[in-house]
Length: 320
View 1 (cartoon, rainbow, N blue to C red):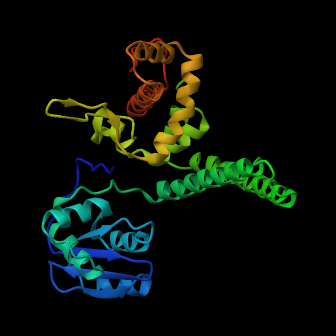
View 2: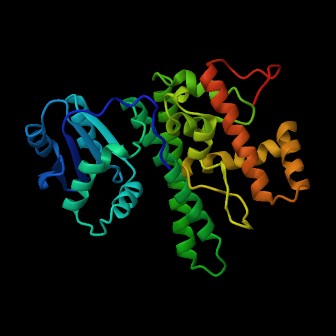
View 3: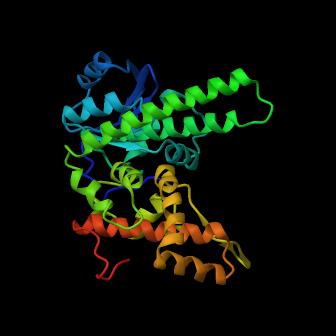
């Protein structure tokens, strides 16, 4: 799920749609015939020469391949809106546009991009920290998978030895990256947010790192409901007519959701508020995972409250 800031600039001037691929960009201006430029500095300079001043650019998030274009266009003074490709596709289908090519996608972005929600923009230093954080999580995950694989009964001894060695190497690289993250975040404008998050009982360095990188910078622009939905811990109704289905949680930001899980379990074991909330929901016949998600949601809201307020957690104050 994506969330949009409440303070987006007014969309004036030419509406430009850009479909992003690894090697090229397909571009449509005001719904016109698409043209193609290379997805590198030379191609983007060429593109900027063809855009009028004050143009608004709509481009899909495309696994990071949109980064160079977004950065260069923002630096040149254009309004750039990054859109969720799933929402773009659904929008096209709702208009009866079932065909899909790069040029068709660029035209649709140009024509309908202004009506779609955009991802909140990230500052340069936050994007760099986010790169480190996500890579760190990938290294840890790969190391855990290899270690788990090494414990399979009957696996060839040499395969076991290789998996254990590779797992150890990945963990060493992860530790090195973690030290680099702490060094950089403490010399960045996000230092205070990183330290404030850790003042909350149950929030350690790992969860603080993810919250700093993945939550929007302007928390005041969002409601609690929007942020818990973005974090993937908000219950969604699942009923129709006489059918009353079980509430479910949306997809949300998988990194926030994943980082909240173990701290929430730890809170259930060690903190009275979480133990009480979990027991109360279990007594109402909620399943284990539903009760844990409720604790995750409360923990996230506690973090949001502290980060909005800008002062450390205080036990004697009324808290969420």
